[in-house]
Image (tube, rainbow, N blue to C red; front, side, top):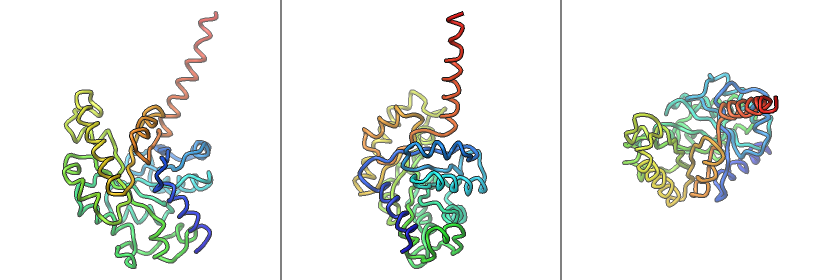
Length: 264
């Protein structure tokens, strides 16, 4: 086993451990600013290929930046439950993949097949590109160093939650509260009237996933919310997005600058 493969296993083990892992979400074109942010102690960084303002070239650059930061597990959220997209994310060097809108056990099994090579019962096409140079060319070893998180974010997904979680090869479930709130009938994301139902659904997902011995993950907009979700028992918690950090920091610094008026 190559040192890189062993390092990847150890990094993924952190995501599967009982301790909470905190992550950063990459939503804009990855630059040195992302590398700087990724060096602040995050356990993982996820490149958002689904809703981020990026293309596949940016996915590759994002993974390079995360690797340069050293330490964080490189994660990619793919645009859809597509074998081609999942394979390309893994070929580019992702250690974990988040698949959106998984509503049935069969859809979860399709994602599992796309994640792994035939030697492990999957259907992944062999062409690892960057991943081969980073993590070796032995399919069985590579299959042992990737993790799959599926997103349950619709009423149909909730109805089929037990069956989805039971699928072998699904390492965890990642909750997107915005889409989940819409799936529960909200007219706008996180509509106040729907919040009690949303919180009940979020807790049901967490407890069901943990009872199955798998990893519960969730998206949050800020550190305060992330701390609450960690206290609730979520084990993979995205703290914020790089776009949010930039906007908030800019607003905070501008507000400080405007204080000159109070002294003039």
